[in-house]
Image (tube, rainbow, N blue to C red):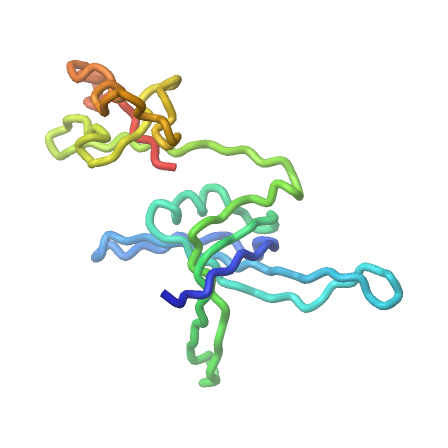
Length: 184
């Protein structure tokens, strides 16, 4: 592939918006981001250069996380595929803009204190039975204190069943299993 991947740091310039295409069961979010280069001029003073504006797009589960986590004015670091978007303006003029289709978006910890909350999905199948990571073809830590499934030696000599715990555990009264699928 010949995609152009970029990493840009800057400030969020608009409140993220969530877009939904119900027909395709697809969601995405967009926000504007400004990045201004700072440099030392010939007098030795710090000076602002030109500001570049980007539209940042995040897809699927990341879209909801962006809407909940990113707010206008905060510093962010965005990595993703750089694209050029073209459209016709309100007065018929041709317009272009830079778009980053994000693979990662984070609050810039070099410019302030950052917190993180992992999203835990409690998926169920149509009959209300809990969906286990094995049902989804995934391996995930299921309880606090379980081994990190992403560590290089996470399985060791243990089986997937050992990591998932007791198969007779029926979960809580609401029909959601006590196992938690953690998507990072």
